[in-house]
Length: 471
Image 1 (cartoon, one colour):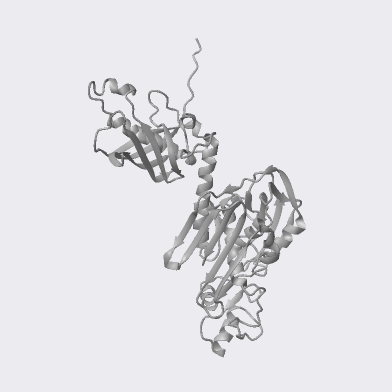
Image 2: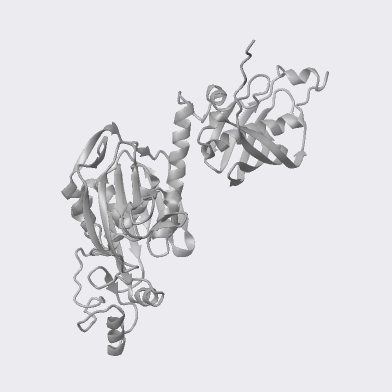
């Protein structure tokens, strides 16, 4: 795998017809600076709006992967992104003068060839690999879909498909290095079942679809009249016929397992939406765009967690996400009001687990209560809220310039006293997030027993700089 980031040497264009819209479109690939990433630019719209190729911008996965930002969209980006990933390009401007890239022959090869003409250029910055260090799994039992990422100091993919159709059968394929992509996978074409073609046509889609850019698998009995009707829908001049292998016309597969190779191509393109290259082994059974994107979201979340930890936790410690030094860098609280000693688990936009070791040295025990020290309930809520403040980090662009103020505390309950010697384990879950308002559910445990809980809402405000004394 390459060590340095890459872009292309010079601009290059590719034109054609969009699969679903049937509209003519030109893609222009342009070099980009280090750490720019992959971005689509709609040059046909005022202001040339950009859409980053990040899973957060996926707005539809019904018949391909669609990116969007507000009213701005780009349809079916997966083949373009597969070509970019297969050539290990990190930084690229993709200008597009329409809403959908050209379909080409239904594979990623037209985009690969265009990028190869432009030439791949090594840059000085190192690649920001996400190293998968634990199993990440997506499963949809109803559709028998499973995708898993396993630790590996390289990148490999294995894909299996089984649609219980005699023409397709059960297939699998494996890519053991990205160097194999261009020669073994980039030219594999999209495929679909005939019933899907009819439904898509009736829905006003696949206006640019033809037997030249897709392998059509027949999944129902066909009469001559049926074939003639399909020919009219696909605007095919010659007579359509069913070959001996269950495909329309005299289609010859480029590989015996071309459908499974194309599924691998699609998955590679969708995983590009994580935003960084991976070091992992990917195993997928019956993947599709919806499952691919959900899996990419899971991996993207892991990347954000690791990036956040790396920013504040400078010394790696077993079982600790943030130690007290990192917490002091994150939170503005100081003695005697810093009530979190360490963070042991963090799930971005999800859940955080923090620890507070309660000792007799706590200043509040002097007055609460003399002779019978009990931790005040309001401080347990405050400790949970401080954990929640750390959980909010990823929602803030400049966390050091912000403060979180309580706006409401509901359903607060205290189950048993917390006393010196106890270790308070606090679990705080983000339940809602909108702009500058965060809702959280907090629970605190001692020795596995619930001791306190509350629903909290916090408002994020700008930190007002302290005024200097002019005297």
